[in-house]
Amino acid sequence: MQMTIYYTDADQYLIDKIDEKAYRDRKSRSAVILTVLEQFFERDKRLGEILCDMGKLDLKELEKALDAQKKSGGQRIGEVLLEKGVVKEKDVQRALAVQQSR
Image 1 (cartoon, rainbow, N blue to C red):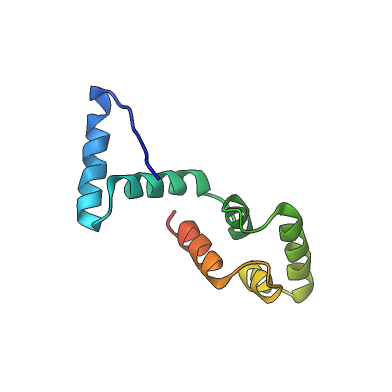
Image 2: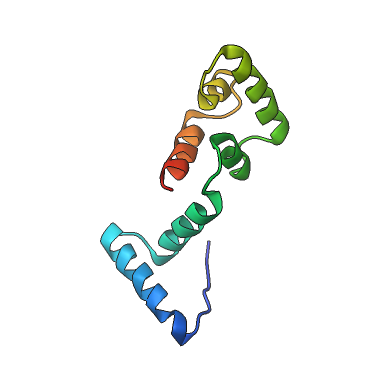
């Protein structure tokens, strides 16, 4: 994937901060920008919503899992989704990482 960013001189300080973080974390500039964007757009969302945004399940599947969660007596939604085979372990781990990076 290629990304082009257009910015003005007034935005240069932000680009400098991104470059500093990229150097510190040993990541590309675009990887840092995508991480920042992901954190911004996914903040205050629940695990199921993040998985839907990631395209790993649809709203119908989420609603079914939430119903099963209510009946299970407090089982975590990630566990319910894994048991039902709706998502993979790596998808839940990724969504949890996004959720916890807030």
